[in-house]
Image 1: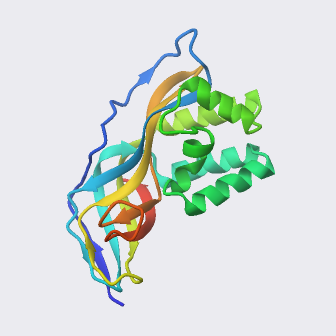
Image 2 (image 1 turned 60 degrees about the vertical axis):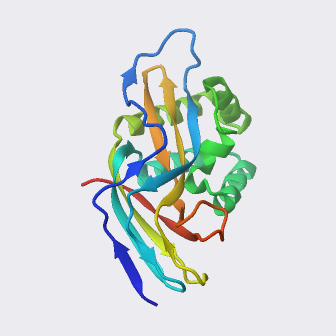
Length: 220
């Protein structure tokens, strides 16, 4: 089967853009937690690719946004999973396999628990998952450090259109989380992009779409 590689110059993420900044912790707010201000399917536009029926392809592109890399998200996931009880770890792993949230399932579904979440909600969910106060503080400080280091990113996604008898082209749809982390050392806004996507049309398939997996990479 042929493989197609696409290198568009740049793309625009059309969900609301966050103004990234650091801010001091404000007395009275929930400490060592994060909120979810926006979540759901994001649409990457500006692509010029076409993956014919029964073939595969790759989409590589530079984005006009700052976000955590897939490696950053994986580091946070592994840290949190080490703190979780076995039953909660299994829940996360099973959710990641089937959910469009992919590698964002832990912070989105387990700790976030919905399309939006307050600081108090995520703090409660982390405690309910079995994390101690010390573990939550360690996790949120690591989360804050990752957010503070965010930079513009690129994507490298593999499109599997081999099972389909139609071609896919156009945009790429992937799950996103954005909000703010709050710790005793300060706060910062964050954005995470999933490692799963739908090429051609929004999920669920088929709807003229093809499943896609890949990485969010920091620009070199």
